[in-house]
Amino acid sequence: LYPTHPYGTQSTIGTQEHLKNPSITNIKNYFHRYYVPNNTAICMAGDFDPDKVIAQIDKYFGSWKKSDNLSYPQYAPVKELTAPRDTTVIGQEAAFLMMGWNFPGAASAQVDTLNVIDNILSNGKAGLFDLNVNQKMKCQYAQSLVGGMNEYSQFMLYGQPMPGQTLKDVRDIMLAEIEKLKKGEFSNDLLPSVINNLKLGYNTSLESNEWRANEFVDAFINGEKWEDKVNYINRISKITKKDIMAFAQKHFGNNYAIVYKEEGVDNSQKKIDKPQITAIPSNRDLQSKFVTEIINSKVDPIQPRFVDFNKDLTKGTTKKGLPVLYVKNNTNDLFVLSMRYNFGKESNKWLSVAKDYLDYLGTNKMTAEQLKQEYYKLACDYNISVSNDEIYVSLSGLSENMAKAVALTDNFMQNAKVDKEAYNLWVESELKARQDNKKNQESNFRTLTAYGIYGDYNSRRNNPSSEELKSCNPQQLTDLIKSLNGYKHELLYYGPMELNQFTAAIDKCHKTPKTLNNVPEGKPYTKQLTQKNEILIAPYKAKNIYMTQYHNGGKQYDPKNAPLNAMFNEYFGGGMNTVVFQELREARGLAYSAWAGYYTPEKKNEPEYFCTNIISQNDKMMDCVRTFNS
Image (cartoon, rainbow, N blue to C red; front, side, top):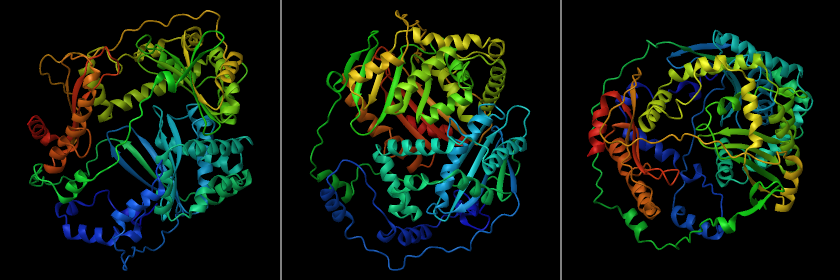
């Protein structure tokens, strides 16, 4: 997309010559040119006293002198593409493609329309890609996304092939949905639903300090006027279906760039001579004036506020005796509701399969597509998550639609209609995903780590085999989901309703049998004791190595040690300013990533354990081990 602009011409960390000959003079000049107050914004959001904060900022930044010579590089406009521009890259990971169109920078009004189009195509529920491609499994996965930057933005498509499918097949499938966009071949309900869900997402995000601070940052980086930023929802609310069609017809032509990521060996890679690295002394016995000033400064101690489950949570029950944990939302009209079941994959390895298969089904009265559209119209999210020992059926969204969403979910889970063809396609896609994972270094490593920690019986191996998937009757899976309502479970609610209003609504819309069954017992995954040194290796042809050192002496959890454990991790290996990271990466240049920690178990009957994680070049592995052990 940007063959003549640094967005497209700069390699990630420079050329080999740059790496061989770093110039500290150029680095300092760059710093003094751009790291100046008239090129900087301090962005904050949270619970603070503005007057005190302004005084602090003035104290520490007030003497910072602006630059009178601040300037930015100027580049000729990128020429519009008039025909597809394609290239191919090769690597041993699974095949996929990305394609994109070029647009003006993030401050442009066109990006508003792109965000709406992105959600029309790919909103995770009822978009054209969601229903016409992913739901029908025409390819393994398709998605759209918007990348907004200061000078240019991109509208991108991402696709993965099914077995036997070419990347060009995937390209054509996605472009066919773009054509539907141009012709307006989508439900008239879709655009209003997109706008409502964008409003919902915006109001939900406002609860996050981090999100609000990042909005300031984005506006500053991209040159957006703040009034434009806060009026975003008002602007997109005025976009019509005709606007979308006209925009797509004008901008989404053969003016795209496309990259095909094929499987194979890249023989064009160039090796770089290993540089001599001189270790930097850590000087931990010395202390700078800056650190001394911080240590000697007087600060008001923060009084901790601990959660008191007897005061901060309100407990209740429904008429049928379902326990309720309740917290009032006094901020907005959004709700979060979870139905928690106290069992999971440790009890039945098919639960996660049933959950995934359910996503492709409808009922006798609603197709899978109609069901997803209905959730989207309600501006409510629905999800089933299965962990080792818990199942959550979760709903969230507009409080006014909670009862409808619960009733819809209950009806779906009780009346899901088996689709044998959809199951066969899902199995094909799942087996392809498993093969893709075998080509991924990190996935291989995580599986090896699970084997090392838990032994042969662990969460990554406790899955139905390929043959079991192929021979399974999918009716068993829908029966498994249907049975959930018959087990004891609890309701976790955060929303604007009063407790009695909530329980009354649940009594009406959440149908359960008069008598609920006890949850099935499971076989827990058990961390193995490390009684001797053992080395486990999974060969993978790569330029780097992932390594974990795991120690479990069987020491039981003691809450009295929690403060000491936390202090130790903060000092030794928990972040970038810790001993492990600074010694292995910063001082010696041995590792890309290095951290370590003494861990508290998730359950009180499990042992505490110690873990080291290092990612390094292959020939530096033993240096990493020796340095860490020292």
